[in-house]
Amino acid sequence: MNVEYDPEREAVAAMKLAADADGAERQRWINAALAWIELTRLRVPFGREPREETA
Image (cartoon, rainbow, N blue to C red; front, top):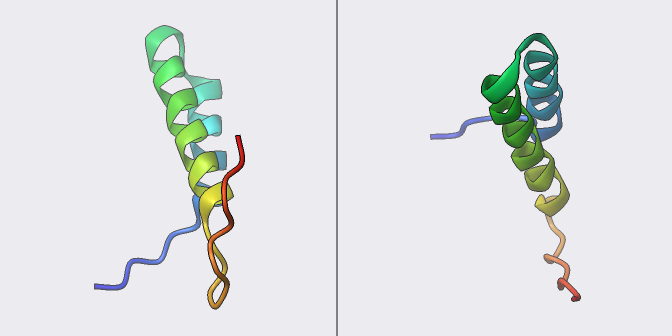
């Protein structure tokens, strides 16, 4: 199964939903957007080795 998704597009969509929400729902959408942003940051382009994380 090949599921195509764009984490950056998903993050933007989550932030738009957060802008329309209030209270706890807004916080949940912000957290979802942050998770998508983290996936964008961690995503490795095809054919490249993952980079080492430094503390």
